[in-house]
Length: 378
Image (cartoon, rainbow, N blue to C red):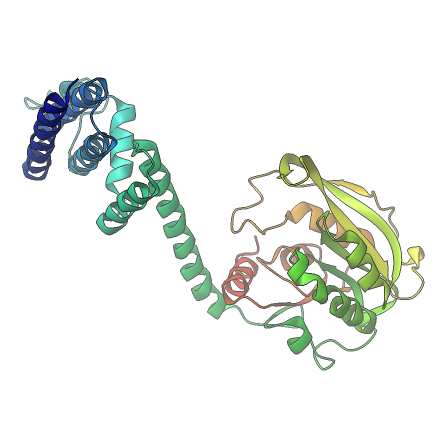
C-alpha cells in the first residue's frame, strides 16, 4: 500500500468512526445499535487488514465498547420476553408479546456483558478509556467488565460499611463482650484489663516488616494481662518469623509452633513458593501449664474454607478454627483477649463458646464491622 492509499484509508476510517459516534449517541433502539456494532466489528477487521494505524484501530474498539454500553442501557430498561412462549394474562394469550433477544440477534451472554458495562458511571467509563490509551494498550470489553465488577464490589463494600456503622451504634457494651476503638497499647489499660486476669490472648496482627515493632509491645502486653502459665496464640506469616520469635521471647516463654491448613494456595512470587498453611505461635507467660486445659491440642488445624471465610474482608479469619483454639485452651466463663479484633471473628467465637471477651481495633471501619457481627451473633 502506497502513502496515498494509506491517507485515503485513514480519511475514510475517521469519517466512518465520526459517523458511528453520532449514530450511537442518537440511536434509540436495540436493532440500530446492533447493526452499528456489527459494522464496527467488520470495519475493525478491515482496518487491521489494510494496516491502518493503531490509533484508528483503538478508535474503532472504543466505538464498539461505547455501542455496547449504550445497548446495555437500553436492554436494562426493556421488558424482554423470558423463554420464547407468548406471555399470558390468566388463560388469555396476550396479543402483543415482548421482544426476545433473538429478535435482535443478541445472545444472553452478550446482553449480560453489555448490561454490566452500562452500569459503569459515565465519568469512570471515560476515565478508564483514557487510562488505557495513555498506557498504549488495546481497548477490549474484558477491561470494562473487570472495571464493572470492581465497581460493584466497591459499592457492596460501602453499603456493608454503612450498615455496619449503623448496627454498631445499636450494640450495647457489657461485661461479656467488649470491643474498644483504638490502639491496644492505648485503650487496653490496666483499668480495662487487670493484671493476671486473662486465660487466652488469641490474635492476628498485621504482617510485614513495617509491623515488626508491634510484636515486642504485644509480648509485653501479654506478659501483663495473662494469668501465669496461660498462652498467647497468634497467627503469623512465614516471613520475618525469626524476628518475631525473638521479640516475643523477650517477655514470654516459647512453647510451640502450630499451623492452620487451608484449601487454597498463596503464591510467594519472590521465592517461587506456593503455601497453603499459616503459622500459629504459642507463647506462655512464665512456664506453660498444660494442666489448665482439659484437651489435647492438634498443632495442624483444618482451616475454614476459602473464599467463604472472607465474607466481610480479605483479612477475615475462620470462625471454626478460632472456636477450636478457644475451647482447647480455656474453660466456659474464662476471659479471652484480642488486640487486633479486625472483623470480630475472635469476639464471635468467644461469645458462641460462652467465654468473656475484651478486644481493640484501630480501624473505625473494622471496628464497626466487628460490632455489627456481634449484634447479629454471626
